[in-house]
Length: 79
Image 1 (cartoon, helix red, strand yellow):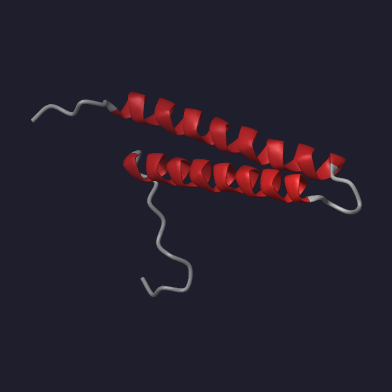
Image 2: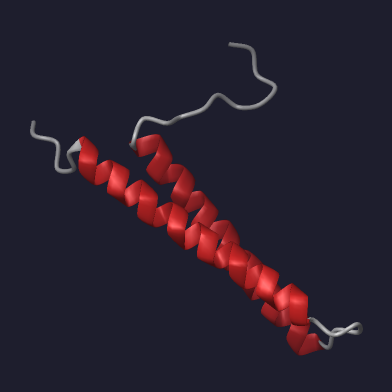
C-alpha cells in the first residue's frame, strides 16, 4: 500500500501544527498581559476558550509529531 503522506509531507504537517500551537500560546500570553487586576466573567470565559484552543493545538502538534516518527516514551515509565 502506498503511503498517502510521504515523510516530507509529515514534516510539513508537523511544522504547521507547531506553528498553530505557538500562535495559540501567544494568544494566551497576549490575553494575560492585558488582563485587568480583577477579571470579570467575560475575561474568565475568554481565558477558558483560549486555553481550550491551546490545549487542542498542543494535542494536534503531538499527533503530528507521532505521525512523523517523533513518539516519545511517557515520563516516568521504564524503557
